[in-house]
Length: 95
Image 1: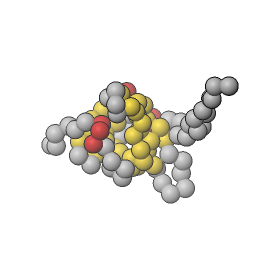
Image 2 (image 1 turned 90 degrees about the horizontal axis):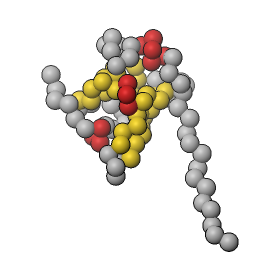
Image 3 (image 1 turned 120 degrees about the horizontal axis):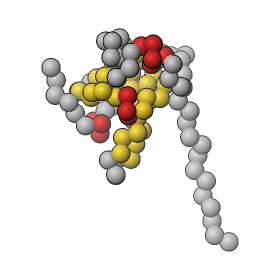
């Protein structure tokens, strides 16, 4: 059994596995604030033509080298919402 690692080490392409052992997809990106060490979640690519799904940090059960294991099974994962990119930030300039 591999030792758990920090969310800082998660890389694009790592395997994402459900609590039932099913392969759910691969990590597309991690979401969080590395400066404050706040892990919000990750997006999971599920296929070439499928929309990535967002998995909140609360549903990440274990992170080991190359694999992220979730606390939800395949059925629960399939019900997660698709990931929407946030709109670009707006800069407000003083008058």
